[in-house]
Image (cartoon, rainbow, N blue to C red; front, side, top):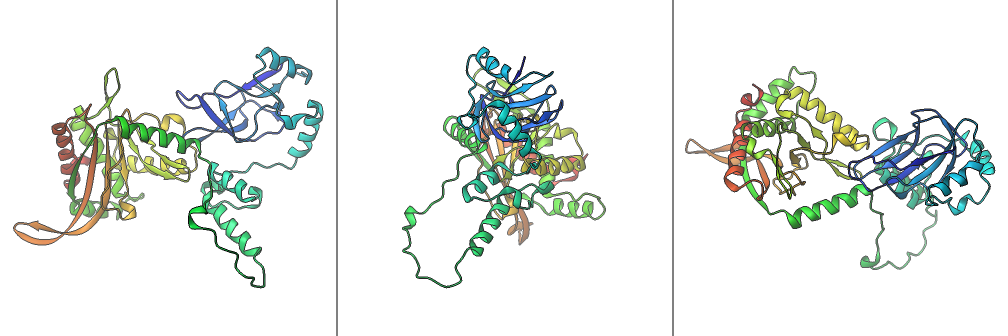
Length: 410
């Protein structure tokens, strides 16, 4: 009998996902393990791979449609079965899967047409946001060249193509300018991605339900900057200030384990290791891939993992286990010149460290005024899980490690 393809639970506790794109057409022969479709979750785009070989007889869901987990999305025919089995299969499943109106032609005709079309079809790698923007602007993704990782088409490619298209279509002779619309009436609506909706929901819940309080510390950075320059003079991989920060956060959690906790309605979670979530900005929104057991890893390993996770996060290639969980988060905006800010806690974690830029400021040392390199960090804390004295103890340990960087490397 024909086999129903169903929307998988690609992320823990997910109730739905978006079928971002089909990579196979009706009538295509599918091998075991071959990618059939791309599924967009709230954090990444993952591939749906075939569990068995066969022919994709019918696609029940259009690209871009939100689908409940477990709902039918397609039909696979195996072992010489015919399209006559499809309707019986759908009926047996309770009639929940319906053929889209556009599929009014017979299944046999659709399969023949799809086979002809698939001979010329090529898979296009593009971020979810780029696909939406291209559709809004009427751009053909197949005609664009991606500048993202592995040639992936991203937002800036769409914007550049749209600008070029507008310039090419501009009239050669100047015409009287059309009346300008009121500023309040001019806007473009960009549909929310699953990631953006999830970020909005979780942060709203966090800010509304978690009793945040904040502690700020100024860290002298001269010793760390000098040690970094010494390491990078001979190291094959350049170590960033953020790599030191992640290592210091992890070691401070090892020194003050009572701060390495999370809050739930029924119990306090005490984490056995420092799993540090590092905020990464992507075209679709913020994601926090995790450096597991960062308190046990040398600085070079932490640096390599962060670079790899950040690259794959921007390409929507992270696996769910690489961004779910974590015991503590770090958000660093120093590279943008931000001097200080306060971050919102990512539950069930109980704290997040917001890191600003290292700046040259006047400092008093030995009673004399001099120029110093200072980085300001703000710790956001869930008061239900960590009280003020404990938070201050952890922040003092973190500050000491940054200002004496060799101690975190031992």
